[in-house]
Amino acid sequence: MKKLKLFYSITVLGSLLLSSCVTATPSETSFSSSDLSTSTSIEEPSSSESTSSEQSSSTSESSVATSSSSSTTTSSNVSSSTSSSMSSSSSASSSSSSSSSSSSSSSSSSTSSSSSSSSSASSSSSSMPSSSSSSSSSSSSIPIEDPYEPIETFSKRMPGEFEPLSMVKMCYPNNMPLNVYKTIAKDNKVLLLVNPDYQNNSRIEKAKSDFTTAGVNIDNVTFLDMNIDDDYAYWVRDFSPFYVFKDKQLSIVDFNYNRPQRTEQNAVPKKLADDYFEIPYDKMSLTHTGGNLMQDGRGTAFSDDLVVQENNNNEARVRSLMKTYTGTDNYVITIDPQGDYIAHIDCWGKIVAPDKIIVAKLPKTNARYQYYEKVANELANTKCIYGYNYRVYRIEEPGGSVVAPYTNSLIANGHVYMPLGSNASYNERALNVYKEALPGYDVVGLQGFSSSNQNAFLNTDALHCRTHEVPDQNMVFIDSRDVYYGNVPLKDRYVIKSNVVSYANNEMSEVNIHYSINDAEYVTYPMNQYEETTNYTFVFNNLKSGDDVKYYIEATDANNNYNVDPTCGKLDPHHFVID
Image (cartoon, rainbow, N blue to C red):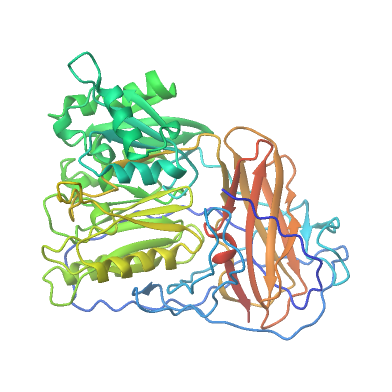
């Protein structure tokens, strides 16, 4: 990931910003197909308000100059791929450091709101400087409130697919064009599981030869012998384990693969843990499959109700096991809107950031239309870790036999690899939705047609099914919760805090906040570490009514592991407006 470093001299015109975060116990969410209404309009949430007051500092605070304000409003949570309604689009002079390429910011067509809460502290924090200050100068030291409630590090956490990856796992052969491997291996490490040939174990040599001929960068490919029946080797997503950080240690959590007859695939997770990664291995007595799980990396996971049906309809046990083994506090279980045999969530939905979900959208004339709308509405009224509702983006699909597997995509290190369907117009619109949801990401459409003109991709089986991400076990993780968003009440100070964790246990070399007030140039300031914790804070003070604040946080450890929050950084920052 590229690292943005923006150090500007500043004259602060107006200031404003965010609240501290408080950990809340998420609720268990389950959606039923009963009481299904044909009305699928989305209720627009109210603007957020701070739920706890903050005391004034007893010491002097830096003052800020008065300026004219620019207020914005937020839109409803759900948008179609053809509309753009977020009036507070971020400035787009450069891309997020989490992305692999720069691009101008497209307006986000979906925003949401919910209540934000501020916390207090007893230590010093970075504070917004006076208008004569320079961004490179040391920040003033003022007390935060007492008592301070730190954001606690997750004891167990399944990272999201959009977080830093060490490699992408694939199988060979896989009935996909070699160009798919070539494109992914260009910018990512690939762990290739190769079923040994029974003739002198020559399959790996053949794979290397095939890849070299096709122009695949084999320097980025690790070829690993793995006994997998060729007839079932395609679906590495389904039989791969869940990756879980347990107290900063990456581990493998296995489950009972819901295809028990495929014994060779069932053995893969333990072999990977013991023989390749050499990391801890656990197995839970839960029947599951990788294609029916997506997670936000912050304790919320999503599946459709296949997971309940395959576990004797014991939903309480499903939730208990997922919490115990993966740290899933909020397990959102939906109906299966597709109504197909596979019942995998990745055939109709995709979580692309901690606050963003893509859901397929069918024509109103399609018999399954109302089910897709029900799920989209339910998700658009579900809280994300930032405190507001998920922002739901819609990808149009024609339905029927037309191939359009757009949500069955792969996100890897600033790239989106989307499987193309059989309709060029729908393909283009789908690509644009990903670009809108993830500004700055390199969005690539991959064709499934092979030299024999057979399409390897189906609506129930495409790129996500054929790949699996492996998290970077040395990543830096920025955990921000219950942030300020939308319209917030005027008060003396706004405390921002994030928990910044190095999973490699490295010291942090930089934790910076970049902010813009009333669309002025972004200013960079270091955040202050709170005592001996991994929490970092920054205070905005002397803001005034109408001030419009955008900000994002970047963190780099001593070994140059890097991350940004929110996911798209400057191109889609945290954003709030003072009433």
